Picture 1: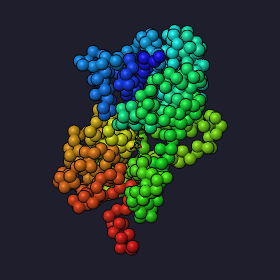
Picture 2: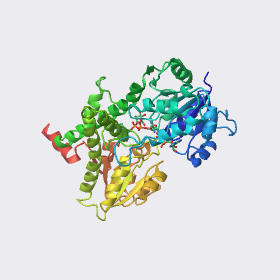
Picture 3: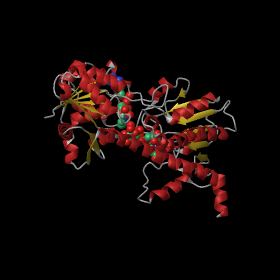
Picture 4: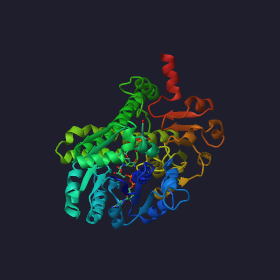
Length: 456
Ligand SMILES: NC(=O)C1=CN([C@@H]2O[C@H](COP(=O)(O)OP(=O)(O)OC[C@H]3O[C@@H](n4cnc5c(N)ncnc54)[C@H](O)[C@@H]3O)[C@@H](O)[C@H]2O)C=CC1
Ligand SMILES: O=C(O)[C@H]1O[C@H](OP(=O)(O)OP(=O)(O)OC[C@H]2O[C@@H](n3ccc(=O)[nH]c3=O)[C@H](O)[C@@H]2O)[C@H](O)[C@@H](O)[C@@H]1O
């Protein structure tokens, strides 16, 4: 029977997974190699912003008043190995520094550190996003290093949660996918996920490579859908059409659907960009690189959105950024997160800074991370403060609070009433009624829109 679970790597994925496993009723031990992270989590503090996670920690972390005491954290591999019936590996797999493939060093290091302590029957479950073929390789490594031999078995269980919705996505996933080599592994994972399975969540039981591929295929599809609508935005710009209306019209077709069809600055974050690149690199290794060549285009459409946003801002500044003040609303790669990994907003802000503007950034949650990564940018403590004396406002991460800003009030603080909506989520009519020049990717300017209206 499975009653104890360890979670190795307590970042965005692992901290959430650990807390949710405690919520499902298991005794959980989270392990990380960063002692400060372990100390923060042990005190019930979430080292990042993830809605709902602090409540779960308060409910379950041992030693906190009124908690179930089911959740603890450690840096000790011996303790983790002795504790867990099941070990989830949730460490990071970033893009390699000198290439586009996934850096597997953290996964390998975690397996190498855990395995020698595994003296009793156990299941090690990979959750990190890895190149297809990794599980086969790691299963051999585990069997070779673990004193328990083939009683220390591997399974692969990719994760599909979205940051900002991580708790809900973990407790109520769309589907569960498990790659297994034995009935024992399957039945242990069925025990772990008995609650969601009992609630009707579909479970797909498959082999290692298929489980690994489901994950990279899913992220590639999502990235492709976003770049598709952003390619349409490029066409709209040339043809004087409006990509927001186009997207809405497409979404009424149930076969297409409206999700992940929001055009704008494109995708960033710690997953979609590096996952499509790692997938292409792996396909090259497998000798099928051509099959995924479309993902190169997906990537370059996405990166072009960033340079197009910089261009549009430069046009609005009269052709040069020199001596101009630019306010950037948003630093996180998406709203409801403090994650700035490959953030399109910060990428644009940094490019504009390098071209001579004074750039002031405000984000509701990602300020600390942004300051550390981009110390050359200026930071304000509110959107209104960032906008003081600005020649152009760039709306680059679509936080709710930016949608709620009154353009009349903001208008009295800026030098020029010019806004670029990089996420196509501001109420254009409201901004134009307050006398702002509103520009967006894939949407006609007010002048073109009038011309199109006259012609039609
Ligand atoms: N962030 C997300 O929304 C999702 C991430 N994933 C995948 O999950 C994996 C983890 O991603 P994140 O949580 O975002 O990364 P992260 O960087 O936030 O967390 C990784 C954690 O692992 C720890 N770590 C690194 N090496 C270790 C080792 N040898 N032993 C123990 N701990 C170690 C780090 O200190 C860090 O706390 C990646 O493969 C990612 O692609 C999958 C689905 C969703
Ligand atoms: O593998 C992962 O780590 C995760 O990657 C994504 O989740 P996440 O990175 O949290 O964020 P998304 O909501 O997918 O957004 C990714 C990026 O695409 C952008 N996006 C999203 C949707 C859209 O219509 N348009 C668009 O530009 C967002 O602004 C953001 O920059 C996937 O949605 C998750 O299923 C997956 O588990």
